[in-house]
Length: 315
Image: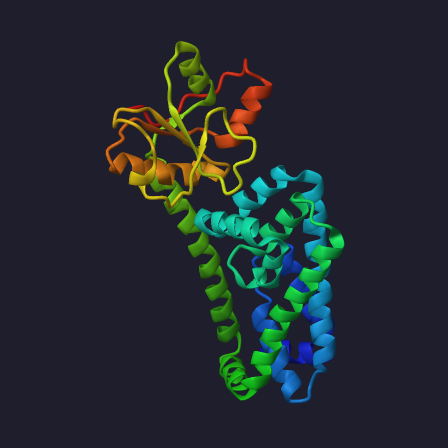
C-alpha cells in the first residue's frame, strides 16, 4: 500500500487517468477509492488536486464518448450486450432504462453513483440520438460531481484515510491480499445474484414466437403484455404495462385467459417476473415469450425459422 501511495505521489494524474478509464470502459476496477486516497494526499500537500481532477474528468469523457458513439452506431444491439455482461441485477438495469426515459441525459449527472448505470446510460444517450454537445455537457458536469466528491471526501477525512492506509500497510502483502479478496468476493456476489434470479425465474414456462404465431393462425387469442421501459414497435395488440402495476388493475379477462408477457432483457427476466406474479394471482395460463421482443423481430423478418421448444413444459 505504501508503494501505491508512492506511485500516486510520483504519477498521480496518470495513475488516476488509467484507473478511471478502465472502470468507465466497463472493467470491475473501482476508481472511487483511489480518488479518495488521492484527495487525502492532496490535503497533505503531496499531490496537486487540479491534476487529479482533470485526469479523472478527461478519462470519463473519453470512455463515455466511446460508449455514446457506439450506442449511436449499434443502437439496441449494443444496449442488449451491455445488459447481458453487466454485473448488476436485471432489476437495476431495467430501473436505469426507466429513469433515463424519464430524465433524459440529465441522468448523466448522477449515473456514475448508480450501480450498473454508467455505461448503460451513455449507450442510451447515443441510442436516443442526444446531440453530442448536450451529452458532453452533462457528461463533464456529472464527472466533476463524481470525481470531485471522491477527492473532497479524501480531503475532509484525510486523517482517517491515512490511518486506514497505514493499518493496511502494516500488514504488507496480507493487506493487499485482503483488498484483492474483497474485490473478488464483490464480483462473485454480483454474478451469483444474477445467476440465482435467472435460475429461479427459469421455472416460468416460455412460449416460442412461432408457437404464438400458430395460436393466432388457429384463432386462439392471447393477451400480450409489454413490460419494456420503452414500448416502441410492440407486438400487434400488445398492452404496455409497468412491471410493478397491481395485478387487479390490469384488464386481463377471466382467470383461464392465455397471457403472454414479453420484454427485451436477458433470459426474459422482466417478463418472467410479471408472469410469476400473474400465476400467483390465479392466472395459470401465463407464459414469458421466449427471446422476448428480439425473437419477435427476428421471426417477423424470417417467419419460416423454427425456434426451439421451451425447456419448461406448458401448464
